Image (cartoon, rainbow, N blue to C red; front, side, top):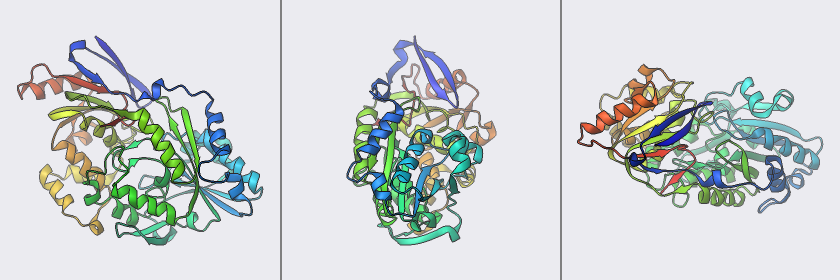
Length: 427
């Protein structure tokens, strides 16, 4: 028997499978990578030796204001490690600089004060100046040009009306932007809903280049690069983390050069070959990434890349916040015919994109090809409303998967396990 322990919220789910049933286990090589320095030292080294840029303290000289774009509560960015050093670097160059930390919520719900404390520590959460981005608040947005896709590029005024724009974040595989980090802090991080909708249009999501690990030729990435440049993002500090959410590498400096260096490092760790199987078990990496169904679609796409046609995806995601997007939920709930729902989305022009459409499109793409079963804390009715099968535990999920496949004449299904679906690039 092979035993597995996979993340589920802040807990673990443990299960075993007969050796002969396991076709493969797809894991990032990050767990094998041993950093030679502490988290703090890795970030300090990156800031001391920026890529393609002067030190942040040099950039801060003579500047009166600075905005730091920082990821929100849905991202496991170790801001308690990064932010103190960014603040120190800025104040080293300009002791009286007025700093605003702009939380890049993208299209997510607002981050709470308790979540800020958990992310940064009480000292920073209670004493620094924070602004929570709201993509739907038109009065907070400033136009800075037109995206290559044709959409208006509107971003939070705190990013525009500042002397120096900086961003912190982390680099991981992303299911349609190719990789997270870098330019993504601006779009969708602090962009208007108008800009995000244009960028996340059905045409781009449908592109074969809008997939995990792909940057070259990716139309979504191209828009994001433009937005970061137009916003004058001057400096980034991005990290790569392991399964325990610990920093194993850091990259600082120019928004593109430092980001690409980090992406290259991450791709070497995350790249895995597909092992086709009838059943693929995946997760969304545990808390905070598996807080809702919306985010959990990411982990499902890793399974999609290695599941046999007509197979079963078992997604283990806590989803304690429920669906994570009302429009996303309603689109699936109201879909009486999945193919018709997909056709309606694909027929929409870039200017007609609706909220959460991209997530609905990707989930529909998988539902049309696979049976999806979720082991989750989300309400059963909610799961079933979205055309996903609900399992109360992993044993029931496997039993359901076997029933589905037996009806198709598959009595002894093969299984591929992806312990952390958001940490791998299956290609």
